[in-house]
Every structure is written in structure tokens, then in C-alpha cells.
Length: 373
Image (cartoon, rainbow, N blue to C red):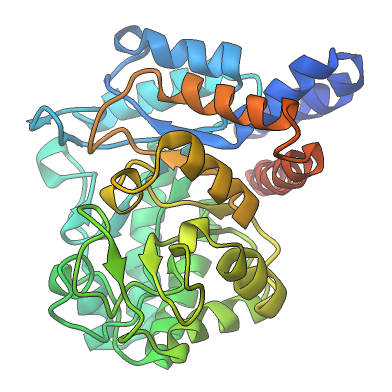
């Protein structure tokens, strides 16, 4: 049965690509742009999310991100209430989409876990706890348990592991939440590698975060501008470098941090010097780059939506993430797609830039399908 489902998905993927030549140029552009968008939504079932269904079927949405808690309304049960409900939701989402969706979640372990024990999911361990234990076998087994839970729930992307160094234990968004394995880059690398390897046994796509390093910050990018110019160290790149050297091609998530020593004008998510220059050219990363939530105040308070999208794409971001969980905008996917289309049509953005992102995204999706047998 499992192989049959995979075969159907694979045939769908081949059909979508094969039919590209038969599509009007405008429709083909829409299909590619849609794959570059990932959004959060409200609803525990397809019936509760009719707008999302439109985004998937008409705007060719590439992915969704799930949450258990809705921050704007301060209420639980946003997308997740039980194992059975979640599995039904993810199955329905995939059945709605012509191309398999990225269905993503933040299931790092400990305090950053969307799958709560109160909803019937197993307890998880913090990265800090695993780093202190410093036994990669334990990290692998813990990550494997997480991966199995995700796989059984129909989730195929985990925004983990965090490879930020715990260089500032008082960091309000990393260290104080026990999200980092260690202040030692070598320890972070080996535990991140064990985590990724465990994910891959269950065909879960990983996302290293937050590039080029968020561990030294003293403020939170969710809330405002975050400057790490005076605290960031080059060894924060070591886990990325070593994982990439060992063939890592899943996702890398950018941070909205500002570092004048790397780019004296833009935060990392909007920086061509950091994404195209440092991550791709210097470190040799060839997989898709995904932004952190584009609605965080580190960006939203300083750039309008069109400017932020323009700069992110020019910088080299492949997937724009709109978590829709600091503010909620049910039309955010439509707005983003419209902006990107207008950038191409007016000549601000070269169509080849869209093609490059689309190819990286589809390569990762195709690999996921092939390894799901």
C-alpha cells in the first residue's frame, strides 16, 4: 500500500513536470511561484480551512506549517488536537495538492514542541539536555522517536535541528529555551548530524537553523531588530560547513539577524552577501534556502511586504515562510504570489531566478518521494 501511494505521488510529480510545456506561460509561472510559498493557517480539518484549499488548488502552494497554539487569539488547538485528527488533516492536505506538499512543524524537543503530550504525543528531550549528555547514540534514538512520530502523523519537514551555538546562555530565544546543543561547535555538529541521520531513516526533511547563527543574540527577532555584530563569531558557521561537506542538501533556514561585519545594510534573510555569497558560494550549499517567518517584527517593523519579498528573493531565498502566527492574514499567500508575479512581469526579478528556486524545491521533493519506498 505504501509503495502504491508513493508511485501515485511520483507519477503526479512527473505528470506536472511533463505538462509544463503544454501550460500557458502565465500558468507555468504561477505554478513555480506557488512552490516558493509556505504558510500557516487556522483549522484542524479541511472544512475549517477553505481559504487554504484555494491556495493549494489555485495558487499551487508549496507547503504549510502547523502549530498547536494560535498566538494572535491566544488559543490552543490551532491545527493539532490529537493523533487521529492530525493524521486525517495531513492526509487531506496531500490529497488536495497536485504536487506533494511540504508539511512542516517545529518539533525541536522540550519547550519548542508543537506535538504536546496533552494531545497524546510522546514527550521529547531538549537539545541542551542531549548536548549535556553528549552521547550521539542517545541523540539519534531521541531524534528517531521524533521522526517516527512525525512520519506517522503525515509531517515530512521538521524545522530542526537548531545548530546555533549556545554562546549566550541568557539569549531569550535560544539559550534560555534550551534549544542549542552546546557552545562548542564540534559538539553541535556531531549531534546535529545524528539528528539529521535519524530524520532521514523516516524520510523527514531537516532544516538547519538559524543561518548564519542566532546563538549570541541578546534580543528576539520575533519582536524586533536584532544586532549580533559585536557578538557573532566565525565558528558559528562550523556546523553548517561540516554538514554541507558531508553532503547535507535538505533545508537551511535563515535568521533575521543583522551583522554589519557580514552585510552592513541588510539582515541575513535579505542579504545577498550572506545567502548567495557566504552560504552558497563560500560554504557550497546547493539545497533550498527557506526564510524564517517573514512576518516577524525584525522584518515586518522595518520593511513593507513587497520590499521584504523582493530583497529576500534577490538575496537567494527559495522558500518564503509566512507562519501567520504573530499576526494572522488569511490572504498572505495570495498577496505573496501576486507580488512575486508582478516583480517578474515588470522586469525587477529575472524569471531564471524563479526557475532556480523551483528546481531546488522540486529536487528535494522528488528525493523525498523516491526515498519513501
